[in-house]
Image (cartoon, rainbow, N blue to C red):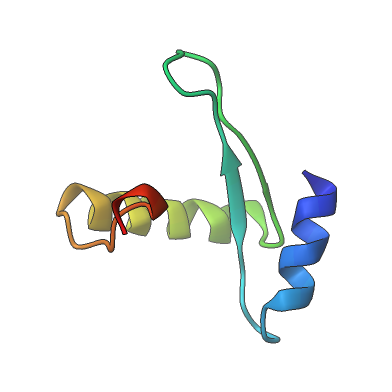
Length: 65
């Protein structure tokens, strides 16, 4: 996860946060994540994303595009 995060960090412009969420399909397993943001900021960003997803205002998954 750290290797993936380092690549993402290099690809993004200065001032952008990111999170990588990894979870098993078809399982009740726990998701893992890594982020360059502090915990409080990441929680706020995740809550906002959940709201957008629940309202179906997102752009969908890679498989849908």
